[in-house]
Amino acid sequence: MCGCALASGILLFVINIFGMGIGPQFTGILSDVFQATTDLGAGSLRWALVVSLVFNLFAAILYWYAARTLREDLAAAKELG
Image (cartoon, rainbow, N blue to C red; front, side, top):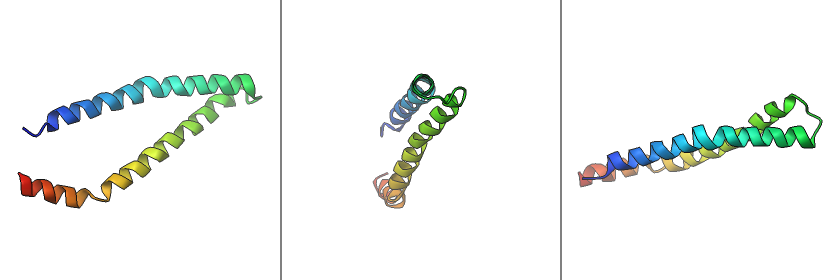
């Protein structure tokens, strides 16, 4: 057994914990901080969402970095199995 199902399950669990649990909480807290410390008013939520986009950019860079060796990894896995 290669453990692919277990790895996929763990990956989906972690993605859901961050995406649906910590992400909205972080954005709400950041919006409240912007509301209390600046004069943005209702625009504080907009800027909190913009700041949270930095994490999407970071994730895209990491996916691109991982994809650089995808062909070699798939060829190596094909040789093993």
